[in-house]
Image (cartoon, rainbow, N blue to C red; front, top):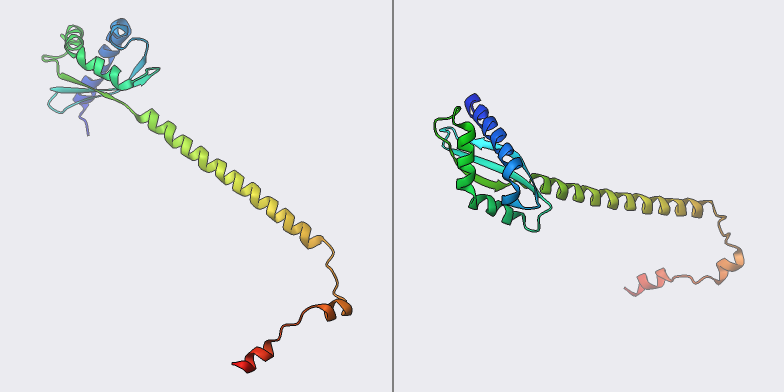
Length: 162
């Protein structure tokens, strides 16, 4: 669990980073829509991890790689913004946050399950309606003539042969 100090530093860094992204981010990630979903700081305050959610990009991993290439510039800009709050600016790492992608995948699976359930319930209701309709239909009566014409199995003859 993160300490109060870690949470405070992470909040300061996230605020400064989002301001940097809003001003200079287009040069790094182009037309993609990038949001900072989470910022974590290690207990010794030497490493900061940024989790980025990336939309409208052909290859989101390439956008993350662009952030990694501009790491020194971003760290310098963070240092300028946070120089009165921190003695040392921590090293920074960038990761793609796939939480929303996973949520969309899970929601698609639930939708598929729900659609299959609805189809099954509909099919079951149709079968029950057909069975109820067949139960209400008048039953055919067996007359003596029809019974006489029906083939009779010779069970007794087979038992004697054994």
